[in-house]
Image 1 (cartoon, rainbow, N blue to C red):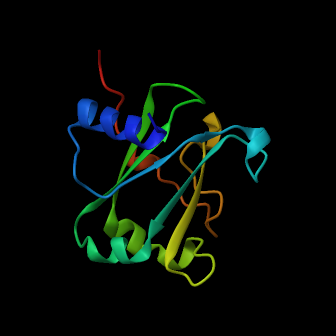
Image 2 (image 1 turned 90 degrees about the vertical axis):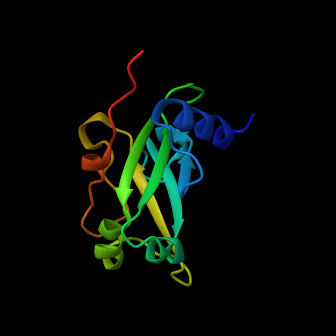
Length: 129
């Protein structure tokens, strides 16, 4: 089963989120990330961010390489729209490219954003049980 399929199943089971704008990332250990630190990489089409209005973008990140657990960020589309100019939009600018730190001291901070934008406020509590 792919990481995305596993992440979608986990999100539905633990947070009851289905059929939404869900983006997933595997865990990139320091040796594989461009920053040389543990991270997640998420790409979100700008058109989806703009179309969501008051909706949310669901970001599901693998907790550790090969882990069955995940981190879940429930990011308001309005927050992303507010910060679009500060986010990395490579190429033709139609996609936001987030490179989110998985390091404990900077967890959920976008390493590519001009202002090192933090998404930590949108991290959802780990499921109990």
